[in-house]
Each structure stands twice: as C-alpha cells, then as structure tokens.
Length: 327
Figure 1 (cartoon, rainbow, N blue to C red):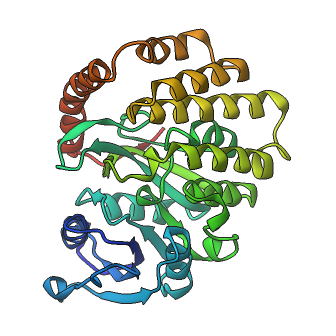
Figure 2 (tube, rainbow, N blue to C red):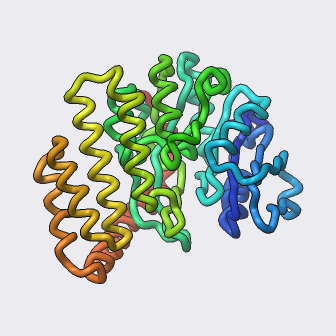
C-alpha cells in the first residue's frame, strides 16, 4: 500500500502510563500507513505526560482532571476530526500493518462501521504469553451482536483492536462510566444494537498487555459491571438461552481473574455460579480443580502454559506475508 496519511484519528487514554506509552507511540510511528492525528488524553497523570520525544508525530495532547478511561475515550471521540477512529490503550502495541490491513477492508466494504483484529497477549515485560480469543486464519469474517455478547467477557473485541467509523461512535452513548471497568464492552454492544456492521481481520495485529494493574484483575468491580450490562443491554433483546450463556461466561471469566489474583475461595464460588448459569462441566472442571491446590502451584502451571502458548503466538505475530482474504 502506498505510504500516505490516512483519514484516521488515534485516541489514546493515559493515566500514569510510565514507559508503556513510549512503546505504544513507537508502534504508531512504525505504521505502514500513518494516521492523520493522534489525540492523547492525559487523564490527570502525575507527573503530567510529556511528549517531547515524539515531536515528529501529529499528537494533540489534551489534559483533564482524572475522570477515568471511559471519560477520556469519549472526549477523544468528540475531539477527533477524521472519518475513522482507532483506539490504542497506553500499554498496548500495534502491529506495523494494523491500520493498513483495516483501512483496506474499510475501502472494499463501505457498509462496515467496525473493523477488528486478533491479539497476541504480552506481560508487563513485553514477553508473549499467548493469544486472545478467535481464530488466526488470515481471513476476514463477520461478527454479529449475538456472537459478540457470547465472547465479550473473553475480550473478543477491545478498543485497541478496532477501526471504527466516527459517525457511528458519535451516534452512540459513548463509553459510559457506569459500566467501568468494562465500559468498552457496553460501548460495542450499543453499536451492534444500533445496527453497526462489524468484520474481523483474523490476524494478530495487536499486542495486548496483561499485567498486575490491568483492569482485568479487578474482579469484584468486573462482576458488578457484567451483571449491570447483562441487565441493561443483553436481557431486553436476547432470548433466555442467550442471557444464560452470557451470564455463565461472565462468571467463568471473573472466576479466572480471581484465580489469577490468588483468591481461590472466591474463584471456586464464581465457577459454581458459572455452572449453575449454564457452563458445561468440561469448561469449569479444569479451573475448578486449580482452586484446590496452593496458589504457588497454580502460578507455576500458568507460567508454564504461557511460555508454551507464547511461542506460537509470537510466530503468528511475525507471519504477515499476505493480506487477509474474505471468507
């Protein structure tokens, strides 16, 4: 693809991001198709964020008193000037061809409002520890609301993955703080409810960082927010079997977060709730067994699995020889 400035506004919410932000900005600098503007929302960081080292990038730095990631992203949507929006969390990293692949799909399929991708998972040090949900098949597939809801708790679609039409984003309620820390999930669900069409590039174009301060580990608030989302947005439009399946996935994922935090007693209770909500015995049996062994052994098993899965994920990341095709 010819190197030109794309009609894309990149929105980065950041609160005390440390060195992670530099890595995120370098991944934007490396894009084969650079964005027209980068809107960096400093959400009350102490000390304030400095961008002196990135004067070559078209960054507009906006500072606000700490209001949370939801408010920062919504401000970015309002401030953006381009047709397409691309979100990037301050601790995540894009593949150099991320925007190129997604813009090509957008130009070929004008009905699309959301174009996502797959992710490689990395730890705080940047080491590959596995892959996010979904297939790595070098194809382009459609994603509807039902499938999104079923996979939402497992991060099937997160902001750093997507290219989204700004008009569609402005017509939605935005990122609502009442759903934190899963406000992005409710944001996407509202878009699907409004009829937004979504396609997924089945290639890993994002390195999504999972580390100790990640919102994914705040499992108490996660559960409350999942239940609020299900009551507000899932239950009114879905049949009972869909609601039960989404509920079961939420309990299962929150239970895994509790297990990662070493709270085996909480995890055990959450896995039982998942089973009562409809999870299969097979899906909960293995994690449930881990709640009965010492946390040190659980941690060792997790790190072993991450090393094994991380190698394959890293190979997938480097395998970018061809463009994805429509399946």
